Length: 576
Ligand code: ATP
Ligand code: MG
Image (cartoon, rainbow, N blue to C red):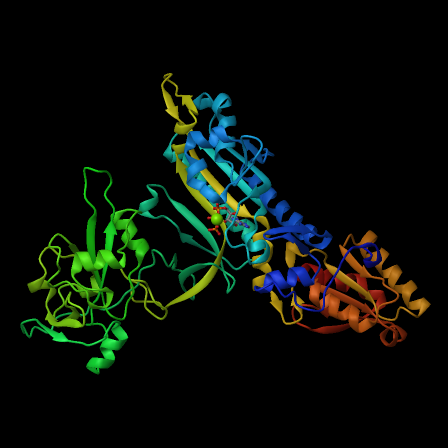
């Protein structure tokens, strides 16, 4: 491709509205432009990259027996009502005003509606169906460029099996295909178990890319042998243990002391583990025949309560008590709550495993401005139960005490999920077994974000000059630069090299053949858009019969005799 014929509006200045690196670089490198919040136009360079990613995905899906579809984005309200998702999605779903249609945020319903009249016998199963298609989601805060768009491209696949054993096989096939896809896209990735008890039942894995631009928080080891979403991450932390002094507990005055830090300072102690943090949660009644359940949660003063872990024990509706409720339930405000002397005697008390059987604890006295010392959970708190309730922190050890954990931000690039029979049942997609008995089809769903892969790649592969492409998703392999455009013989020679690399060697070349642009400008553009191999034809080297090659990733420069250029370029193209 000749740059004089290629629309590549690069920018020197950073766009003011972009925060994350990939967003800034995609705009500056002329890959995308924003049309309106969360909605982007894909310019030629961006589209080339997105299409290469799609081709990798398509290839890996076909390899595991996937059949490609292309289903509509406009979908009838009716099918979303049947699965209850018109409400579940809420504001995330774009609803059409003058028709009973919605713009699909995902396609379980539509694929299941095709399965229903067509997959009617066990002989029709299993199947793996997929599409690469535009999705619409009214994301609340689309502020990271194409990482979180309101219109974006997703590969979504669905497996249909006779039973859960079949689903396990389909799920594993997808998991392996995902690993191939992300490797081929050049991502450093890991997967985390996204299974949460509260979601009900099935396995689910998220594929993550470590990045400051990420919105997920994960706990990982350096070697990748452990990785988990922070929401369910576990670590080893010593129990606080017992001192066995058996002193009686006693309230004492702590004027204006509201936080653990203030309490530690007031008591002049640095180890906060025995300052038990007490928080009250409310588990709302399931119906009018039941009452709200009140739960007091104790963790060490140097820990935080992990609310997802609480949800996994008590269900998704559990929530922190409101200030008025706290006073009503405990007799005090947030900073003075504790396990001893609660106003409401029916509060369930649970504590983190670190506090198991601990004594000499200090916590709120359930009276404003008072705390209680010498609390012995074994002696003083009847029916207490212990769970893992804490948020894992950076630097802690894995449960087997072998490796250090670090807490990082990560981008979710893909998600595989064992759906089970939810959609088949809601939309009546049943098959007949070999005895003529009806069963719901067992489904899995598997999503990957196309643009999110590209943005994640850039997050991981850039420097202060721009993007650093490599491997299969590089938009071009070679960036050929005519650095002496005023010299006719050099232009002619660069033209010849272009034609030779393109037609004889079948290499994808972007040729900066602009005659009216200074070399420095061309070099900056080349570094910004980041094609792996730069071939520079300039007057000085040309006179000595050489071309200069610059490797974008390493910055290394190599002089190569012109008569050997094609071979050298071919060799480097395969390496980078
Ligand atoms: P997130 O938690 O980031 O919103 P999600 O759980 O909603 O993601 P899925 O519904 O599982 O995501 O969608 C499958 C894949 O589609 C995601 O792993 C991600 O790569 C991509 N994706 C989801 N939402 C967006 C978006 N708004 N913009 C770009 N890609 C997206
Ligand atoms: Mg989402």
